[in-house]
Length: 421
Image 1: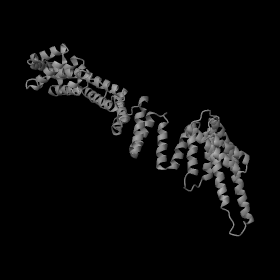
Image 2 (image 1 turned 60 degrees about the horizontal axis):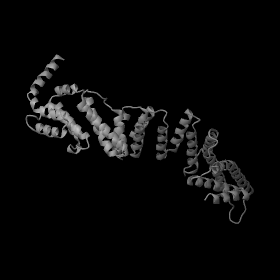
Image 3 (image 1 turned 45 degrees about the vertical axis):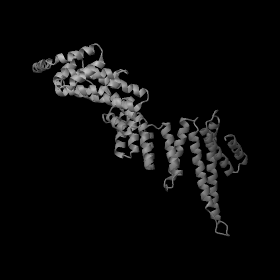
Image 4 (image 1 turned 90 degrees about the vertical axis):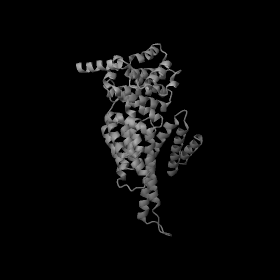
């Protein structure tokens, strides 16, 4: 410590010879004549004698920062804060020990004012929705902040709020690669503040779009660990599996989730929808069709128990029964006699049994479809989408009643269609 003190004293003595040359600059600063002070300090630092003068370099930082903060003078110093920062860095290169001592005497205000200035400027730009400008200002604040931290003056190695705002600004400015770079700093450090969940969500979306499976799963796992109660991460995994076309994995994921919380309405409903799509919207052969139909019905009945006032589970359950009826009808229609001949008694019996199954399924479908229709019909001011959905249910009910030859009921829903145009 004594040796360091002696070094500092020696250095002060050495540059004290040049002290007279910066007195005039300091007087201008004290008089708040920063325009003339800039001219004076620039001239002095341009000389061979003053090029490495520590006091002059720190004065330059103060002068340029002040000019940069005032609307009337900031045009005199394009990116004045960065020039001020460069002046401090040069002083540190010339004499690290003495510059640190000099800055400490001022509680590091010359460098901290640059950090705070860039930070505040970034916030103002962000609030004004000038996101690219905000990105640049926040990024400069981070550069200054990292320098402060590297020299042990204060701040943390990862300024989480600032890094998040850099990422948010980049995202809003459509600079997605930059957003990913800064958001990843938070995720890689396992930052779990509730306000930063969107950083993980962005990374999951970003790498999914990039089709980078390794990075996608990395940030999916990190996000799930950081925010175990946020359903987004499970939803993102399911969406990923759906895009991959791995229907079995989708069902398995829902089953795992429902094993943890069997009363989760959304997971139960979309589990049923996933089975519905597998059964009725795919071309692949399904060996366990009856088993899946049973799971579908169980899921939608559970949804009805959880939210009896919602129409969607009634509708999906009704559609499932309706589609099964259509499948039975198609099978019955395929039983045809050879040309000019009648069906054999066994063929006729089989056909009648299949048709009876079709009629049963239609009768199973109607109560659910009517419940869905009635819930939708009770909505007072329907939006266009709601009307379209109610029309689709009315069409199903019209066709269902025609299927079982109940013309009066079919006409009721035919008339309803006219009212829903």
